[in-house]
Amino acid sequence: MTSSGFVAPGWEGVRDAFEHNLTDGEDIGAGVAVYHRGQKVVDLVGGWFDADRSQPYDADTLQLVFSTTKGIAAIAVGICVQRGWLAYDQPVSRYWPEFAAKGKGEATVAQLLSHQCGLFSVQGDITLAEALDWPTITSRLADTEPEWPIGSTHGYHALTYGWLAGELVRRADPAGRGIGQFVREEIAAPLGVECYIGLPEEHEPRVSPLVGGLGGDAVDDPAIRQMMEAFMGPGTNGGRALSLNGAFTATDGTNPFNSRAVHAAEIPAANAITNAHSLARIYAATLGPVDGVQVLSDSVREVARTSVTPENEPDACLIVPTAFGMGFMTPSMFMPFAGAGSYGHPGAGGSVAFAQPERSMALGYVMNKMAGNLANDTRAMALIAAASAAADAG
Image 1 (cartoon, rainbow, N blue to C red):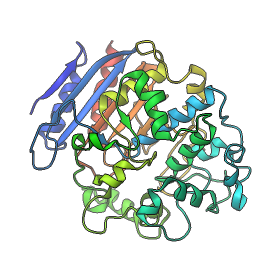
Image 2 (image 1 turned 30 degrees about the vertical axis):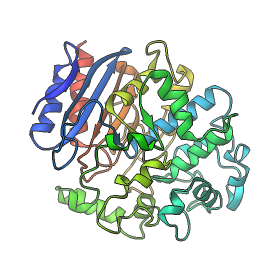
Image 3 (image 1 turned 90 degrees about the horizontal axis):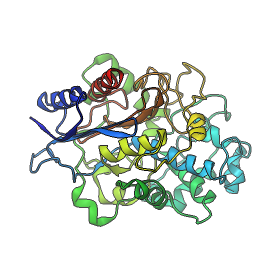
Image 4 (image 1 turned 45 degrees about the horizontal axis):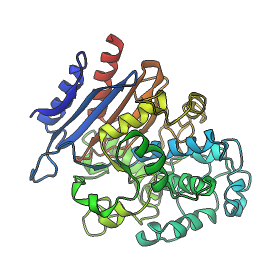
């Protein structure tokens, strides 16, 4: 199976890795893009739009990218910081007074963005419809008691991170824009890309449906399967975080993230709908100007990409050590990216987007066939390795 698109001289290894994923059946449909020194060097798509192979996966295809969304939300917060609307070291309650409830008055923006506030789910039952209603979910989170003393540890806020960060953006923005509108107007439009948090209905036919899902049954390695079952089981921190106390658990055998209701909502931790080229271009514009547009200043980027969680600290939700800066995941055994200095976010099932100033490189990868893991996907890592080798050679 071949791919279509653009590959600059010297970057053919990325195409080889991408096509290997397709021909080996690791991917059904996918896209990968790389920017280097502010220029596009790879932009490829290939495979099939759906499991029935009804149509090609082409440059017009859009893809839901799960937690790769978190990096976009982190950029949105960073834009607010560089404009003086937010400060990482200030209490969240300065901008969102209701957040001070249940002992959270001193929690800082930095602690919230680095998953240290113990708000990885709500307390009590919540329905999917309630979770998809912005005023309801943000009010519930503001009134939630932390699961641990704030700042004492960190644990992955798999879904709640987005509503927390997104409400900060809404409160700080003088225009009061929701994060979906903010991302469209402040990030996507200036760069001429597509990245929707809350998908307009007219684009729904372009969204490639996700195939498969997370969980032990989807993982071949017995050790990894056992570990995932241990942290994703009912009642565990990980299980509660990933499902929002069961609100996002499939009840009829279908993935709720393939539904129009979830696509239309704003879930800034998990439902960005975009493509590989858009992700790579956005991250490239955090490194420096791309066609005259730079979305994060150098000074804000350097703060945002610096890990603030203790090195090798086990994640209270994911068990294994993870590392976070200001909303960005930073390199760790859980997700190494391209090595030291990288910042970005992987998404459940395989997608990833990140940048690495040390190589002047940004990469985006999207796919419709989900692996069973949350990060460190073998397809993505093969692409990252090929891109890193090309950058080093150039």
